[in-house]
Length: 143
Image (tube, rainbow, N blue to C red):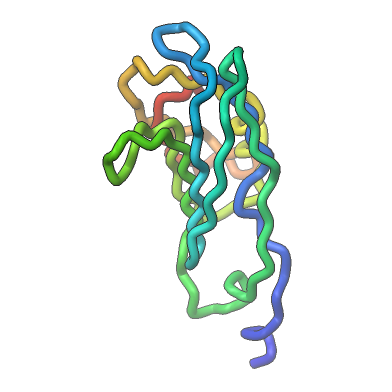
């Protein structure tokens, strides 16, 4: 019963480092939004530099959700550019139900190359820690 109230650190996102392009050319001074949803939504923003680079620090929260056997919520990671639509220009979108602290995610998020001129694609990336499982990632970033 006390497990419901025990709060622990939970990784919403590893650090993110990326570069934004449009038809192969770096995009400067553009706002990139990171939205992380795990029950509540946590948003932050980064502005691309002159060479299109952007970064986000890792994001942790204190929560009792992982110890709650009745909680089945997944973590949603979403990087996008605002363009007046609900979903924006999607750079990265994935739902993480297991392995939230995964080296696979850390490695992918450490070197994103996103070209907004390209059609977003869906990728199934095997999870290093459990190759029989995979992350499904949708977006304009090269995998």
